[in-house]
Length: 91
Image (cartoon, rainbow, N blue to C red; front, side, top):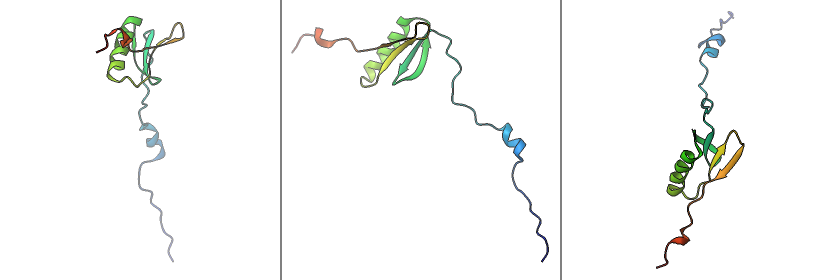
């Protein structure tokens, strides 16, 4: 029997390292207040009021989710809740 030559098909290992899969991580948030929905950061804001307004919009659309604003400087999480509807007259 004659010897069989092996031929490898495909890219070499060095070229595989050049084609890395891009990461899903975002760049670092540069603003102080981070809006988080179900413990996942969605966006960051320079002021608490702006983050709270965006959080209220999400909470009104999806009342079941947990919406918080994280202060990266103070290290404090504040929960966003819907305004109390008990002020409305009963019908």
